[in-house]
Image (cartoon, rainbow, N blue to C red; front, side, top):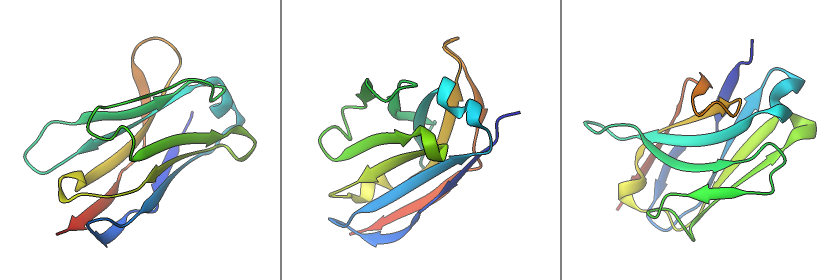
Amino acid sequence: QLQLVESGGGLVQAGDSLRLSCAANERTFSSYAMGWFRQAPGKEREFVADITWNGRNTQYADSVKGRFTISRDNAKNTMYLQMNSLKPEDTAVYYCAAEKYTGVYDYWGQGTQVTVSS
């Protein structure tokens, strides 16, 4: 079963950058579309970005477009989220997830906390 582990979260100041990683335990990782989601306290989980299995196509939420970049390295079974120009409203637990093109994300990581101070 595919297992995902996020890392790279932390406490930063507004305007700083962070890079999140999502490591998978299987080579089948390369066959999954992947996504990043986040959930702030008291709010519902929201979509951040996604990427196709081969990395050729990406999508972003309007709130992060131009500041965040999603990428993947299938040789390393790892996906990334480069976050630049961070804002306090980016504060949330960030989750990575995997989808086998069913429209449903079947596998989720445990999340990594990102806190942006003003």
